[in-house]
Amino acid sequence: MSLITPNIGMVYSGMGPDYRVLVDKARKVSHTNYKRIYNEYPPTRILVQDVARVMQEATQSGGVRPYGVSLLVAGWDDGIEPETVDAKEGETEAEKKLASRKTGGILKGGPSLYQVDPSGSYFPWKATAIGKSSTSAKTFLEKRYNDSLELEVFSMMPSMGKMTDPNVRMPFTLRS
Image (cartoon, rainbow, N blue to C red; front, side, top):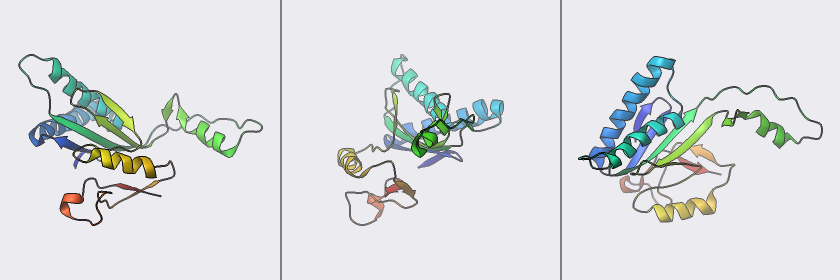
């Protein structure tokens, strides 16, 4: 796992040298292009768009081979405080909470996870896996994932029973 900004990390499946090039480009974009202008690190979605743009340009450039990696980019965004919403009569607590999390169609902040394919297309996920055993890991997540899960600081590959070096894949795992 590589730290791009203090709140955004990236992992890969594929060719290591291509990953290192993309990590360097992502750090350059986030530190020089974005932080210098706005005096803050970019939100996860903006960084993912920039990395995906670099990967997509490599697929259409003559004499340049596409990057041979799939990426998972995870981050924590602070977000923007929403405008105050007056409570409507008969509104449930869940509806009030949902209305207060929106700011112009953008969530107030929190965790975000994106998958970037070698073609440069990217997708937001609540939980996903890439790599060799991704189908079994996705099956595991589909069976056990719900919105009330929390992050834990340790991890092990769900299909394996013990925590050894080959099993460790990501520094976060979901726990209900």
